[in-house]
Image 1: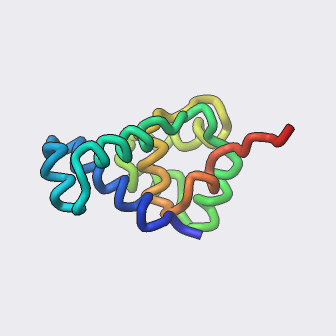
Image 2: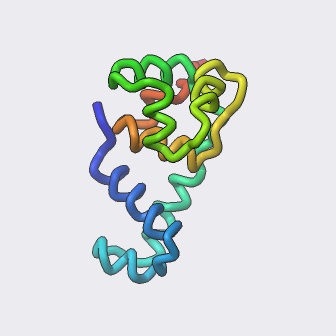
Amino acid sequence: MGMTPRRTQSIQMLHLRNKGVEWAAIGRRYGISDAAVQIRVARLKSIRAAILDGGKLRATRQRCGLSQCVLADLIGISNPEMIRRWESGDHVPSGTWLIRIMMALNVAPSQIIQQEESK
C-alpha cells in the first residue's frame, strides 16, 4: 500500500515551499487557500522521527529491492552508513529525512513507523 494522493500532494507542497515558493502560489497551484497549504505542510512537519521503526524501514527497503547505498542516494545522503544507523536504531532521522524516506520507498507512514500499543 502506497501513499494516498492527498499525502503525496502534501509532500509536493512541502517541497515547493522548501524551494522558496510562496504559500499563495502553492495554494493557487492546488486550488486551495494558502492557509490550507500551511496547515497541510505543518502536519507533515509534525511527524516525529523518534517513532521510526528501524526494522520496518529495513524490511520495506529490502522489499523494494534497494540497498542501503541506493536508498541513501535516492534521498540525498552522501553517507550510506546513516541508513544502517537508522535501521539499527543507533540514530533517528529528522522529520524531513523521514518524509524523504517515505517518498523514495513510496510508502505510507504506518509502514515505517512504530504503532502505538492500545491500552
